Image 1 (tube, rainbow, N blue to C red):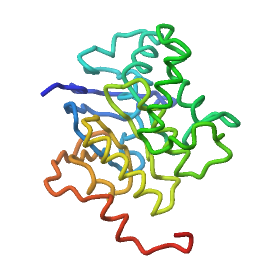
Image 2 (cartoon, rainbow, N blue to C red):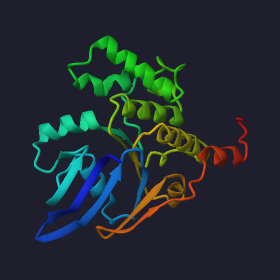
Image 3 (cartoon, helix red, strand yellow):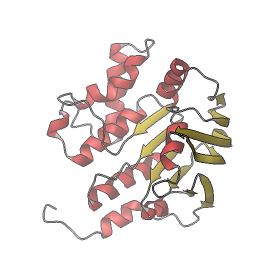
Image 4 (cartoon, rainbow, N blue to C red):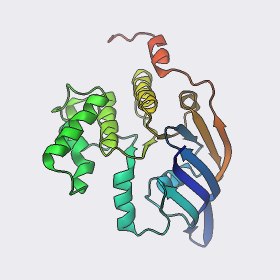
Length: 247
């Protein structure tokens, strides 16, 4: 099985005044291709620092990080930016869409940093990604014309458009109501079933029931790394929710 992510004794220290804060204290784990992993932890657990490390937004103080067999720690900032663009699809809690811009234009954005992709190819891939998340009929809708769930689907399509090695989702259901959250979880389970590698960072323990593995952090350590042998179906959970007035 192919390793997509390998962390070896990752430590991250920050200097705050005269005090050294040990945000990560020797984190090690491997994530293989096709896994759907939730990473959980309360505030101060090191979860955000780990997310920034995995996303090539920050460099560990020591230890080794391999992303798709590429060593990240010794890379320059520009090298990390290219790797991030090619290998990681980000999905954020706040969507981070460009305002007054169409769904297609938002999804095209990561490809604009890749000079080998033509404008027509860019548009074709953006449309394919939007169709994959069920927004084939919203291609020219602008951000301010969409619901929260639709905007998050656009964000997921944008994460998919580069065919990344891993999708990194940070509290991707955090701004959504219960029904829409399950709707997005259904989509993540569909992507997982298609073989996508997904890391879903969350503080919500309920979400771990829908992933295939759960890693828990506390005080910069991994305190739990368990396989979920009884993955719940988000589609079934969605169907079981009481109908809202709008349905």
